[in-house]
Picture: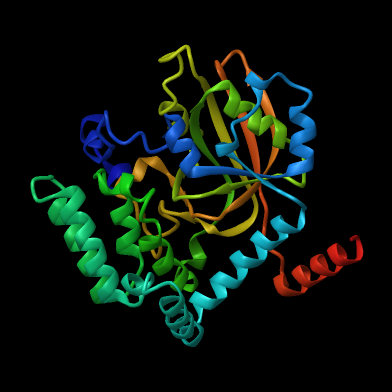
Length: 337
């Protein structure tokens, strides 16, 4: 049992709940954040043919959609994701990868090479964006130091869930979390999520049309670009929607389906006594989606009773043998020319 579960009454439970007026963590509530977090990758020929049937004012903005020339690009995304996990997951491959990346990218990966460099980089972000006056400054510093001392990823996952300005900075500094996570995927395997999670989203009609254009098309995928908080509890995501707060936007509930355990969807809430809650807020039942997670749009429903749109997304798992699959894809592309 967690502290939230054994609390004697609701008044005590409030101490373990995220304060109101916070980061709106389980709902993307402006167009700028939507474009940072989600990207629709689609076949350009299919996209253009769809757009020609509609008025220009209904056409999804190009900054929202990444058009590609063939379906092999999507296979390439899956392959690169799988290769990246391997290169950073093996100690030997990781050292070679860091050396090559730093040489080719002018030391861009230096802040992520080891626990000490990650700690120093994150401490700089905390000092810059959280500052010493913040009530959670000391807690954030302690978690970063614990990560460096224990060489375990769990303190960084808890740091992510704190209600601090550092959460917003993740849109720009996601590698500071992503690379250490990938390097320690094996430790997180019991937390790989299988099931359904939820997130709120507000958008303009153009953005909704982008999702409709991708619906039920295998040549279209939704790519998560940044860390994305979802909840295994539908009511948590719905509580962040603020339906009716703005008549000029469309409210949507995104439903993420994971038929198989997903290594880029991390269960932060308690699994057992051996795997306790990693989130600072136990009631949220958070499932953290990592950048580069891919989905197909399964269906879109208009729920007049709930006054929001429901977007069903199904996880696109990586190929079991990604290099072999990508070679087949390239060969097929050459034959079709």
